[in-house]
Image: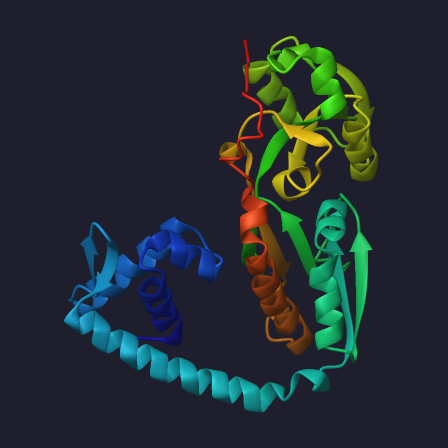
Length: 304
C-alpha cells in the first residue's frame, strides 16, 4: 500500500466511521468509502468490520493500522528534519479570504503570525474569489461545498447558518409571526444570491425585502439594528445576546470552509504550514460553527 492508502486507513481507525475520517482528511465521505473499498478489493481482505458501534478493524486491519502508525511516525520525523523548527520559516504568504472569515476568526491568523514570526502574512479581504491560477494569492480560504477541480487543499471546517433577528424587531413583529411577516435584508445586484431567493420562495413566500447591501459588515449591523432579518453564521448570531435565532441552524445551507492552493504549491513550506495551522485552529471552533441547534432560546420557525 502507498502512504495515501495508509493515511486513509489510519483516519478511519481513529474516527471509527467514514464521516469522521472524511472531516479529518478534508475530503468527502464518498471519497473515503471509495478508497476503503478499493484497498480491500486490492488486498483481498476486509480491513474493517461494519458494526452498530461503527467501523472496527479486523485482525488484518489491526495489523495494517499498526504498520501505518509506524510509517506515519517515520514520515513525521522526516518532515520535521526537512522543515526544521517552526521559527525557521520565513518569507511572505499571500492569503485571500472572505470578510466573514476574517472578522469571525482573526485569531486563526493571529496565532499563525505568533507561531511563525518570520513569515509576513499578506491577507486580502474580498468577497470575490481571488484567482489562484493567476497567482493573485498563494492560499485561499473559501466557503464552498464545491471547491472546484484542479486545486489542492483541506476542508478545515463547516459553517452553519440560521435566521436571526434583533430582539426589538421580534417584540415589534411578534414572536409567533411567520418568516414572511418579518422585513428581510438581502444582497444587492453586485453580489446576487439566487440561493437566498430560492429559499425565501420555499419557506417565506411573499417576504418583503426592506434593505439591500453587498457588504457583510453593513448587513450584520443592519440585523442588529432591527432593519430586517437575515442568515448569519451561527458562531456570530449565537454569541450576540441582542439577537434571537428564528429556528434551528439550517443544516442544508451549511458551507464547507476550505483552505486551497495550487498543486504545485502544496510542498511549499509556508503554504503547508498555513494549511495545517488552519485545520488545527478551525477544529477548535467546531462547536461554535455548528450552532446551538438545541438552544431553548431559539424562537420557533413558522413559515405559514
